[in-house]
Image (cartoon, rainbow, N blue to C red; front, side, top):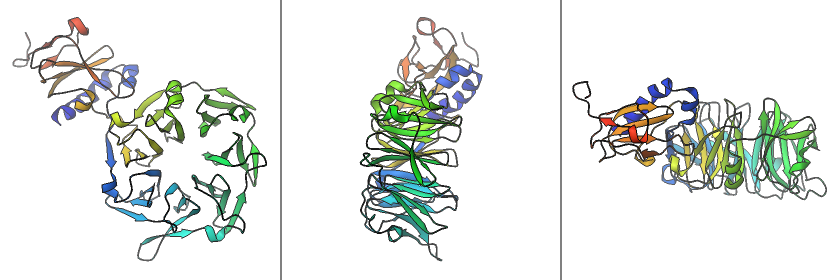
Length: 408
């Protein structure tokens, strides 16, 4: 703990003094909090996260909706006791949930007890059979619930439920997305549709994705951005799409991404099945990867959600986590390879060095890696390093004993 605290504090000052490009590429582990099944008292697997205007967190879990007020957890189950796969909150603060063959919203009685109100009674006759509601999306025109068989839109003010079947030859729906205030959905044959008023219309130029799986539809500088598993990211330019290269293109092709979320400061958090959550800047820069090496329970992240306090919630196949990202603070500890008590820290060029008391590896270099910062040996050091010189690395890097504030 002392080494972790010392390095975190020292890194604040050294990062501030470092060139901007060096500080940007250097990142330790994020401060995060993991919540295990024993903490919230239900099954391990989680699917979605949302936050209401009061700051209360809601998690879609295999046992229902988990509710966390910062002090305690409680659970509200769907009427059919199925897993809750999707969540969203509308402008009034009402929390909506989608489950298997079921969707509805949370209610509170006069005593504050939370319950669940199903919207199935509002569904028109002949549309009552559908599978998992993979998306619940609050739009200005109402809350949209998406399943592979049907697309629903509930307007609470009008008390009206609209339903759309997949267009002819499209067979079924895949994922639904919200970009700004517009609703998009991809069909089984790859067609990307936009819900325009009461009609589903093909997106111009999106036919290039007909043989690809779309995992992200968002906005970049007011233009439509589409992310696909095989082709990468594209930005709409008029009636066509232009490539939007990112530093994570190769990583995303193998990471099996399945959802993304726009971040308040720009950029996106991309949930993947293999490589955790991948954070991209608005310019396509790879900012950070949150995975097991960062401290998560699992590399398989089902959903990422930024809260109003500046943190990022991750729903995983095992547990749920909240990470303080983006944040100016991060830390290095034994899990990144830094062992022993940190007694000195210095930077040379774009490399950060820490002097520790661990065995004969007094000076250790903190590498500038995106995935998780690791430390490596550098130079010849005394058994107990008290200070690190800011000299060139490897052969000439040296550690020296500090005596009465001076060095030999």
